[in-house]
Image (tube, rainbow, N blue to C red):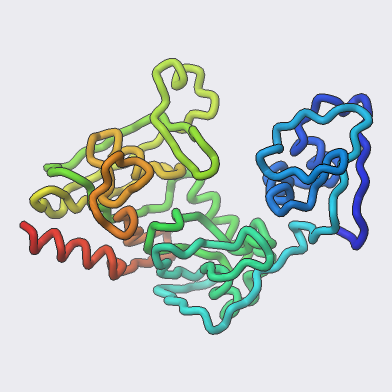
Length: 310
C-alpha cells in the first residue's frame, strides 16, 4: 500500500488491542488480511520483526509499529498460468466447473504464488477477476481441502456468484462425495454433530463437548447422510451427501464413527497407506448447474488395490 514504510504509533486509547486488530483498524484491512501481512514479514514492533504468531500480542501506548510497503489485498491479482493443466468438466452462463486434482490449492494466498486452480482458470477466463470476494479469491464459490479431489465451482459473473453463494449458505446445493474409510461399514445412515475449529494452522476440527454445544460459541452443527457402495476386506467405499458445509466435516464425522478416511494423517492415529486422505467430490447440482468428475487416478488405484486384496 504505497511505496513508503508506514509508521504507526499506538495511541493511549488503542493500548491493549491485539496487534492484528490494531493493524486492521489502522490500515483498513480485515483481520485475516493483517495476519497474512504478518506472515509475509513486513511488520515490525519497536524495531523487531514479528511473524503471524504475534497476531495476539497486546500493543502498548507509545509503541511504534512499522509496516513495509505492500500491495493492498483488494488490488492483488491472480497470476495467469496459461500452460498450467486444467480440466473443465462443465460450464454454463456465469459459471464453470473444474476437476480439481488432489494436492492443488483452490486459490493463491500471495500474489506471487502459482500452481493453484485459480492461476490456471484465470488464464482461460480473465473475466473472473474481481468477481465475488475479488483479488486472490476471485470467482471462488466454495472450497475443497488441498488434498481432496473433484468438482469445484467458480463463478464468471457477479450475479451468478451471489446466487450460488446464497444457495450454498442455505444448503440448497446438492453434493455427492465418494470416500474410502477404514473398516467394514454396512447399510446407510445420517448423522448430526456439533463441530468446532480446534486449531487454525494446520487446521484441525473436533467434535464439541456437550457443554460446548450448549454454549454454541464457535460450534457448527454438521449434518450428512451416507450409504455403503462397496465393502472390502478392511475398508469400505461410501457415498456421502453433506447437508451442511464446514471445514473437514466428512473427515471428522467418520473418524468420530470409528472409520477414519483411508490415508487421513490428521484424523487417523494409524492411517493405512495411501498418498492422501481418500475423499473425492464426485458431483454438484443446483438448478442449471450440474457437474460431475470421475474418480481421481490415485483414488481409483486405491480401489483397485483394495479389490485385489479382498
